[in-house]
Length: 306
Image 1 (cartoon, rainbow, N blue to C red):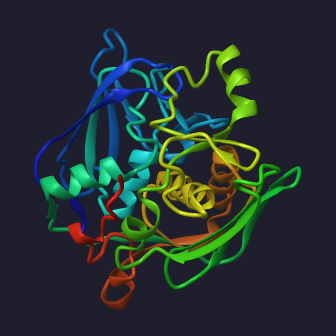
Image 2: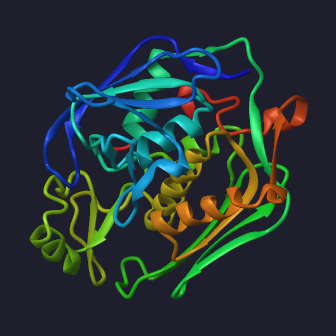
């Protein structure tokens, strides 16, 4: 069954990049509605922005969606990951600014708020996109792939010169609450050497040690250290799930990312949809439906963090 939230869920915080306060309200929606953002502060233009791959305007440091009137919303990847990880296919997201609040830098606050308010089954079957043949994109030493699989699997590899991160590789199957247990609490991260550059270019204005993991060589500068020894690669997997959710339906595929980012994942979706023989939409029932992200999720799956 398709899902939505039982009642509106409110989130308040600052944007990671613009540093501005914003209030976001995730509201119930009917079956087949999909995920839409609505800019409540916009007048005289279309405030509605669909959460779809072909509306991605910029994906360098975060994912920014823009409609045909030029109205945009950025840093959507964490809330999209939370929705996908809980199996929510339908929601209207009101927001009074151009950037989704970063909160603690992970998807955990979004997941907790949505689960606590409750989810509602809708009288419509879930349809998923089954990948039928390999699709790959490359950029420099980065690569991203979609391969046929029975359910959604994510494999990610990263490598950074800082010893606090180094080389990390992780693979997970996104079923039975895996996202909520394994990835939701992993925070965005950056190198201390990049902070000044981003600030000089008007980015990361809302970044603090409380909403990002900052590393400098072997040192973790953020108070409390890491939530996982491999938190960095887990967060990249979280981002990938959020960006893949812009396909508009759950994927039945294996995603492999090697030093990939938002832009490459979006490029991968664009290549997938450019080939009608690479995928098909199918109704999910039985064992296939049970393997979708969000099936069987419980509040107890949410990892407690300091």
